[in-house]
Length: 392
Image (cartoon, rainbow, N blue to C red; front, side):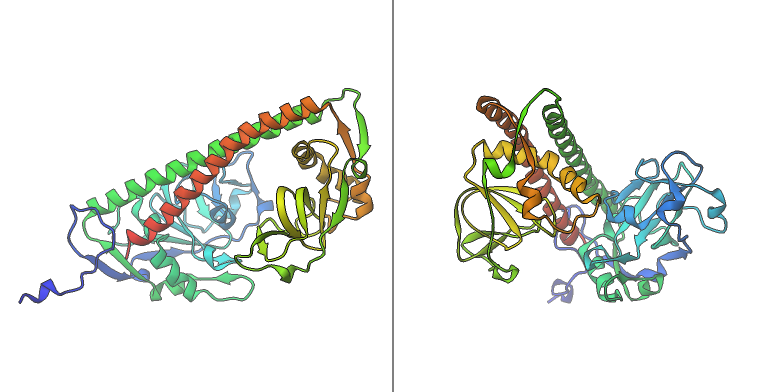
């Protein structure tokens, strides 16, 4: 029997069928030279104009694409060009890692620079790496170092309590598997790039719909016509939940509304009605609509028994509530809402037909918006799975 037939090959689980050769394993520190980076804060950067751009770690966490073009207008300039002295300019093909994160998922998150048409340097909390041996094609490194296998290694090496960090020294303990055929590298990067571009397009469409909804609300609710107003307490009943936060039950029977953006469950219900839920602390002012059986946290306000369209009221509250609360506290930081403040909120009154028409029109746009969000979620899941299965 040929022993090669029983050999476990060093290849990924998912592969383009035309490629059969094994991948080769390296230690990451043997592949790269590392350069010092600056420690400039946002106050030392500008989006107005400049000669040198700066890759800040916050941008990597906030969604710069894995393959980043220096011309991306999310990347700021240095205010003072003297700050680039003694720093290596970032070149096409270089990797920039975020070396710090408040959660493990962001540790070692990397981007690959695919254009160096504008001078740029690596900034605060980044690791700047440049390949030594030209083993990898442009575009492949970015996806490779965002693969599940390498991200898992970096997470295990991260140190810290509240903020987790890595340094270039950790790369000596990171195993990297690379296909020797550069045509395979190209095919992987082109395939994943197409998904990245689709995700970016989807995000832009979602932003357009969000902007459209905001514009329609602004046009409707900013009109200065002489409207009648009533206090919120005169158009609905206002109460609160009675439960503590520890009442949440995984896979419970009923919705449990707290002061968080996240949704939770519990096994008992105290309300069975159409309601608006307003966070009294935490995510102060966050408003949700629900109809059915549910329960609520003791600092969550429950609005019910409405004398106007509840969905219209939610849209109105989404538009005015935060500004109203700030005006009452004379501060941008709001730690909680009092019942008295909420009860006295003035609500603009319009006729019932206009309420229903407005809600219906917004609803049509939101339906398309939520469909796009679901498609984006599916693309993100697909990308995550491929970053695991296409690599070793």
